[in-house]
Length: 517
Image (cartoon, rainbow, N blue to C red; front, side, top):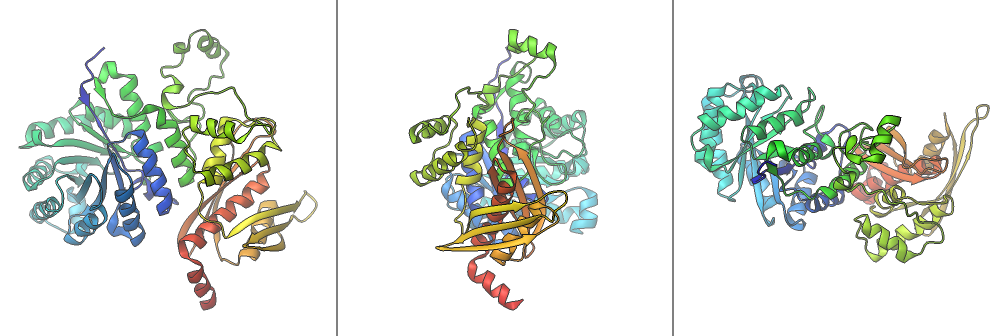
């Protein structure tokens, strides 16, 4: 086996570039939850956000910097004083802060976006990197659209960044244009032509517009890159970023070829993927490498026979390596609180007493409807029903009347504090009727943007998992709900999203907006 002494650093941008996926909006608590899981995963750097982008982004970066220990915490900034100062303000409480500054270097960006000359860009890099270095010792510099930049100018910019104090040089394929061979060659040429390159770490940030982000990242490693940037599940703008779980497992599974190691706790990969999918409302495609539902599923008789005789005939990875453990012990309605706590701890969930109380109550409720509760059901209970913001509106009861020859009608009972409120509404279908009844009860003018239903497990008594996205005042809120009854799951998801509106906007602001209308 090849020497694996070369250390590859993993830079996670799920909370920054990943959150730029269309329709994704995470609140501070959700970002903290993901950041803590990324720390358990063992990533080296968490890019927590873009502090200048909005007050919410600033507060989220500051919260992650203050509360998450272990990884380096990075904040993104454009190459100007205001951005850099704001980034440091958000990061200054971090155990290990990093300011990540960037500016475009391709002629097309200089001409049409920045309207700057090459000399002006060089001066901006010199001033910006030096200003950032005045705040902390760890400075990352990215020449945006590096792949389409003139190589001589790119090398000049990188050398200037090194002179000004950059410690990491990140080479982005911003629009996912490169092929593996040419991207690897670019990294090799940079290593040969940039003075002082041996003093810094080379990083790469590849987008997936041509489906080559992971391949390009691995090609860069072969040519000397020591840091890879990407997002869990490959989420991000347009077609997304390099999927970190794919890069990590490629390096591990083919360590005989790449001769590299990472500091990743691979057994946390599946749990991290599930959490990100749940909180962002972005389902993982079934045939997705490493973490997809079908990644370790065999339907062909020949494959099934081979795997039963010897797993390695058709599986190059053990699913346990990513934390996907198949447990044949099912919990049921006679199982106690201690058994539930033990199983949740085995699955990696550390709950407070209050959270365990909520999980146990929901578990018992589900167990009355479902003979056996699987690990996937338990994960859904915790991810969808326990780790939630305070609820102003609580679902008490739901009654649906529907059919192909009747008008769908929903009667809803929602508890607001000590008061039980009830309303009925008709709709185009049962879900539409339920949502209209909820709108009458909550009186918050939201717009449904998307609705997604998945089965958590198989069988007639499968738990339905519903994710909705609603819009209020131009902001998107994601709600999730589970139940063996998909209509109940839908109502829970919609109420969860509305409760987020109340929590984040504030009841007083909602009342003022209602009065203004």
